[in-house]
Length: 559
Image (cartoon, rainbow, N blue to C red):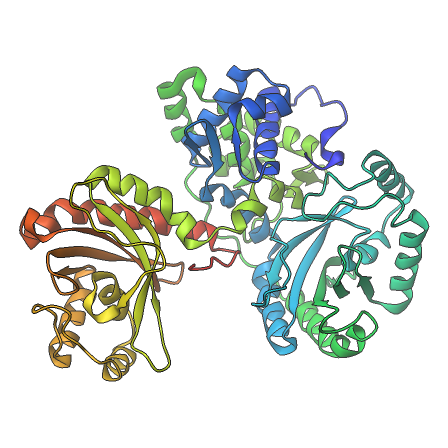
């Protein structure tokens, strides 16, 4: 179920693009379903014709924003580029995120950055702690203003109309069903008068307290972060649990550092904005080609509307119509209708000349996709790889032990069906020095670190082919680094051959490796390279492309 404020908009203006509005309704409901839904379910919740939903999903698949898996449509990582465009335009995660991360490290508590979104609060940055009981909100999650510390800070700027809309929403949604990020609210548990009192208290104190407003045990303190104009642009929150600090104890424990961090953030916001980065190539020609190829199965107005959102970004926080038309390659009249439609739906705001993306853009899939792990990103690409090479494919990461040797741990795997196949499961660990994925990951390390790791590793012969001489192994790793791949032939186990390549993050660091395993008797090592390496590299490149988008503002766990 979508946020109630988004389900009953005013009548659209005459220039609004109906197919774009209907298409975005499908995308919102797919997001509300956790990122996966059957087409039939989307027909039911949107009230649209099955043919319309199928055309929307076909278009989103063509854009790379969803995958079709059987009867289900599944949000794909590339969709995050819409939310990334909004976050880059605000510059809040880029400028303030590192300061929030340092505060979380200093306090050993979870820290959040949130912005106002209508009568709600939406998270734009999270620095969480690794605990069994820790903050579980995602970037893009929307909370009711009254259920959390930041909301009282933002509500201080509301006018009579804002308060009226807030009361209307609460009356229409007494359990907060339109806010799936929070547990249901018990009717009568939080009155309007209580929230108004909290707003007044926050105004007087300069900070706001959340005493288990979201759920029992969760407490938080928030301060506003102001632009040079004095306008609050976001709120910085420290979140804890009553098992660590009570609501009475938390302010004294965190306010000094919180205030110091807010001061540093406000200084960061006073620095001139980032110069505009070059806009990506206009997508209009590609959209026209897709329309010619797919015909009625491609909703061109949806592609145009989403392209309009990606025209914004770092240094492009506010754009006039002419700049949007230039960035997208669309005629001015077409771009204008897309902008008017997106403004009507709340994804853009305008002062009459310049358009700006709003936090509501994060409603388009960002929250469920920001929780992706690296194995989840890799899995569909490994499936495609196995279908292509007809051998098992895996992903592994390097695990460092303080006393034991470095190992690799399998984090994703897609087996193939053969009479003789490689039987390895997710979670399996092997010595890094004797595996193709381990060698790829060791080869990516700085030479001094690589040598130090091998110096503490006992190089045991696992088969008669295992390289156990350190000098020779270092030479092998140098060759792997130069070649960009590793082939290990019967060194881990007799009869087992594997070929691996690295998977690199946005910084160029190898965070994982992918491989294809086969039986050594099926051909020569050179034959395996010739048959498998191109497909393996393409799969790794596809994983890296998704990882670059997904990891721009969200942390992507390796396991």
